[in-house]
Figure (cartoon, rainbow, N blue to C red):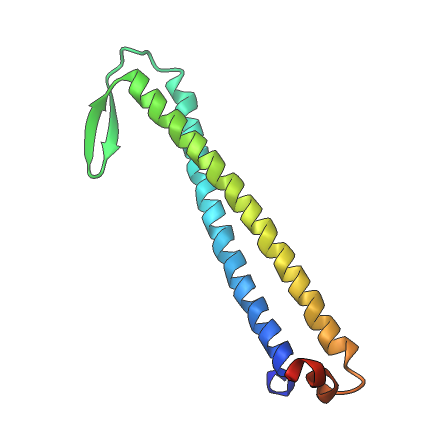
Length: 129
């Protein structure tokens, strides 16, 4: 059926497919960020139950390096804040992509439905020049 579509409709269809791929990528990134946020928040909550004099270690690449309570708390708070901003940004990006997808879908439906009685030639006149 794609071969019978006017060029403008084919272009819109390709844009829809690209947006769908983008939406999937954003959803995966958002899910990963939400998981990291949840883990970091849990670690921060657990830190409250630990005595400040307890010897702690943090992961640096492949190594565990000794750290103190305040540094661990600061690092976790910064990570949580950064991830909250990341999740919020991905939420907004997800909304924008969804809006663009819906707009393109409506345009494609109008293009195909509005000129449906006249056939593909009717739609090619003004846009084809």
